[in-house]
Length: 581
Image 1 (cartoon, rainbow, N blue to C red):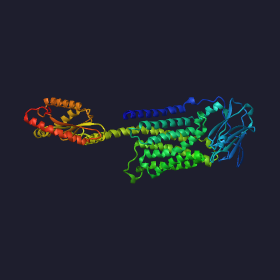
Image 2 (cartoon, one colour; image 1 turned 135 degrees about the vertical axis):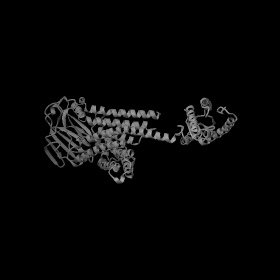
Image 3 (cartoon, rainbow, N blue to C red; image 1 turned 135 degrees about the horizontal axis):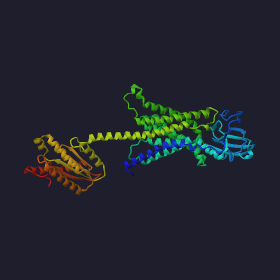
Image 4 (cartoon, one colour; image 1 turned 180 degrees about the horizontal axis):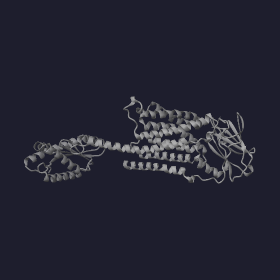
């Protein structure tokens, strides 16, 4: 197990490395080297379509203007047009289909079909990127695309259809979505690393659990953006899996957002937010079960989740605004406002909520209320909001560290004042009592030495209290110097001192007491008027068995026996040593 100091250093270093990824991301996203020119023309086929649905036929329309609303299970739309007349090496037709089976025919002959095997197995038909080879003999001929909804709420509008070279289309696809894809990759990696940091470096630190929720939010949004924009299509052929992951990531975001709010701002934790959080978690657990075992596909719950997300967005925004109520409500004056670091975090969450909310509103309107295609929607505002959220997390982290260091310094200073003896600068009685409790609750053996200055009252009566105070302070300085490695060296009050040593090395203790005697002798050679003499008693305790107070009383009893002997010796001689021979 790494030490707390080393763990904190590694945590800070890794978080700084994450912060350094931001300019790298911006450079890569905007880099001209990602803007290569296609070798062959890329031709969107936008106009001159004949569109057939159950509601009728539209002739000579564009894909954007065609009136095709939300298509449900079993409903079909047929799109007919003519292929370009110019040849392109490795030429293909390209379009995206969402939750639909696809058939393509050229000049009346079926040349392509997709999704029917999923339908036969009762599976959800995934999002698919369709590439249909166009042979030279097919140029100029009529082609037909038929999309049939495979789910209750399958798709709306019509997808863009493009003709071009297959390699150029791949490259064009990546370039057109590089901001979204790079944002998704960055958020995915950032969230994953943040979760790892929480797991491996949380022990020994007081990091709020909001860190694990912020990591989840970043990771889930990254995963959602990558799945939605087809990133995994290029690295895996398992489209069903990543369509499923896309929905699961989407459904996990509301509980992650609510959990982040609750744990980043404890004042927001109430019965309403906790109910939403628990309800979200239960719903997320139920949906996959229903999908796999009851045959109700997971995409069916999308309208419900969208509705809940809107309600939660409004609730979270209202709660965040409510945190700053003392600024504008006189009746709330005197209530604590969020710290600056918390404010930065709230701004990040607000940016994310606004970006997601606007994209969600656009998606709901396009898919359910308009004739446009939802497949052409890009989550740009969500990407921007998520990036601002991540930047705010990083800024919050460094501000939190600064505030934590300042708080720790102030606390240490206050504890120093509370636990330091004003006259001697060593631990006071309160700290000694605290140490008694600590070693009593511990498992280690220990030794307690009780000290008492001899003749302090006589010095006070003869030379005044200033001389007595100097006598106490000088002894404390020598004691602290000799026992610098002890668990505690403190003043119990008046002329009484104590030393606590962890372990049971009596030879070491005896050696230190001899050294103390020698140091007092050296001191007395130059301070003959007010020499230092002390008496002590030593007692040992067994960890987990003896209480510190009991052992201290034993040491104190031995010290008083020695003190009587020392006083008798000092009274018998006009000049004595330390009396500890």
